[in-house]
Length: 174
Image (cartoon, rainbow, N blue to C red):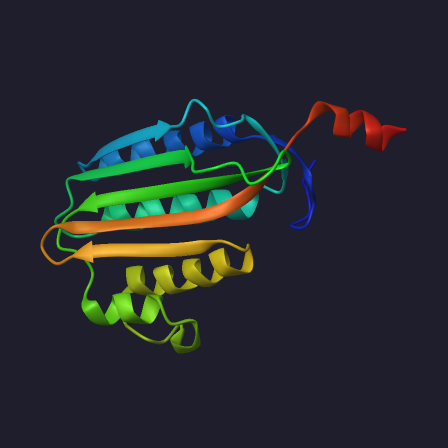
């Protein structure tokens, strides 16, 4: 059964991560890259919402890092960066790639929402970053990019997820 884009359901964040990791691991292998993945063991496992937009953003960010020129290693980490309340978790997803880094012009545009344009550059990866940045903003998250020319780039996404709490299911059923 397919779900609509706005559908809210219970999903397993670790299972979503594992499914993406298999696909991305094969991509890394095809391009002779090393992909290191980790998920914070303290992070709750089950959440409520639609995991599809987050999965697409996560997969695309890692693909961009894996396909960048002169990159050998891509490291991905999902961690709990603080519990806002009993119902949500603040999550940080970071993707780090060694390599040439982003140009200062690209970094500047990524940080300026009013300058966003899908026609800004001919570089497909930079266009994808602009699109991802807008998607993250629409989800209420924030993309932070750190890049040192010649050293590499780290993309970090901070966002909130609604935790699944068993008593919610029973309260909603009655």
